[in-house]
Length: 269
Ligand SMILES: [Zn+2]
Image (cartoon, rainbow, N blue to C red; front, side, top):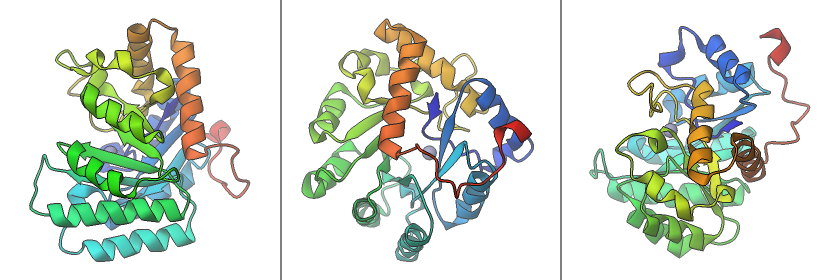
């Protein structure tokens, strides 16, 4: 199984990062995509991906809630990194109108510029959309083409949101712990989202699935999400694993591994 979104570099894992990765591997997680959110967490993200180069794969981007007055410098940093290192995606990027709209103009600009950066580097984008689907759609409507691909991470939108995403034809939906929440409306949307359009994610340390809600989330909880999708789709967990893993590998070009990726091997963990 593949966790396409986890912030395992965050300080919540400082005490047991090794064990966290190990637990995920023991639960059958083969790849974890690790998006950074700004210059502040970039080094920690890269260290993690170097330490576990066979499991953790880096993405670089400026998160919408980190878009502030200095965002132009932050974008230059993202661009410089894309020119000098290998990443599986540009992310996470997007627009967030939930926490604040003070920097909405800058958020729009940062999102558009990073989508174009991804296109230039032939990389997918990892999109964070919170109370902002219309904002994101209006930018994508203007600049989308067949080279712009990616994932709407932590998807918890409406049927209309999903149908709009499907129209672009180049995006997957990232399904995480929200699908297991008792008050979630997401299960009612799942009948129109085929498994071929889904990648799994935890968004660790956030959005822990039921019945562990309230605790720290981690990549070893991916099977709980796969299980819920299997129930809703009335197929086996193995099928969910196989299809979503294939989706993730294709979207993020996860295999074959480059020989240059030399980190700690699984058998030494
Ligand atoms: Zn995230």
